[in-house]
Length: 101
Image (cartoon, rainbow, N blue to C red; front, side, top):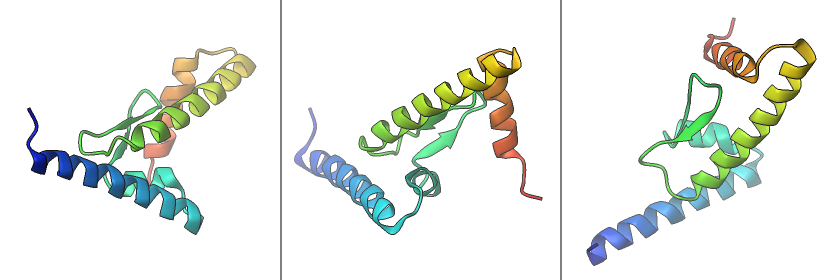
């Protein structure tokens, strides 16, 4: 059973995450970049993103949307090049993790 304090803390964390995402959208910043910078989202070697344990619940919708869009793009590229979606996703991860030159 959650204490009143822990319920308040969870509510505050969720509201803070929602506010940060809203502000970033209004400022023209990328919500994904902001969530990454806040430590709420990480890149996976599979080419997709995941929500961290510390992320507010509001980040889940962002992660789902990003992963759906990536999957569609990976499938389109894979069909065009005659390779698997997994190969495209893995290469996408490698490219994202390469330092800028």
